[in-house]
Length: 141
Image 1 (cartoon, helix red, strand yellow):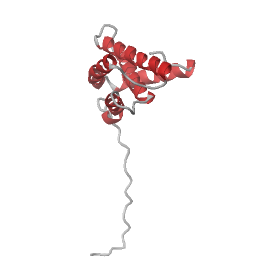
Image 2 (cartoon, rainbow, N blue to C red):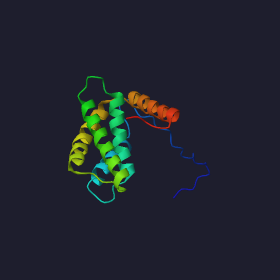
Image 3 (cartoon, rainbow, N blue to C red):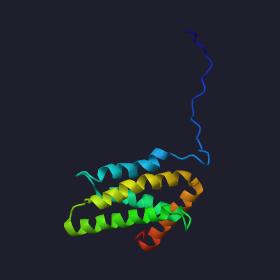
């Protein structure tokens, strides 16, 4: 092995900027799919319901007014609201059959729609949701 006196240049990774159509889909979609799996199990928590609500809210904020995916997102919001009301009343988060069917049928359609939305629209909708929450303290879905 040759021993040179020339110093080696240190490796510095360059920051990678994703092209406009690409996003880290695992980070965006995984919470919703984990929540969908947790629906029928004992470890269903309020955070899972929030993850489903955030996906539906993002679709409602980015979809055009006459797009049929808005109805799917609204049915998901209503199913999540039913789960939350029952959790307040009973004290335990759980979903019944109709809610599970609605959420498990709606989430793949919602995620398929979100894959077609440009990153700029998603960023705009997310910042609008954060601004609304900062202003009022609640997020109306």
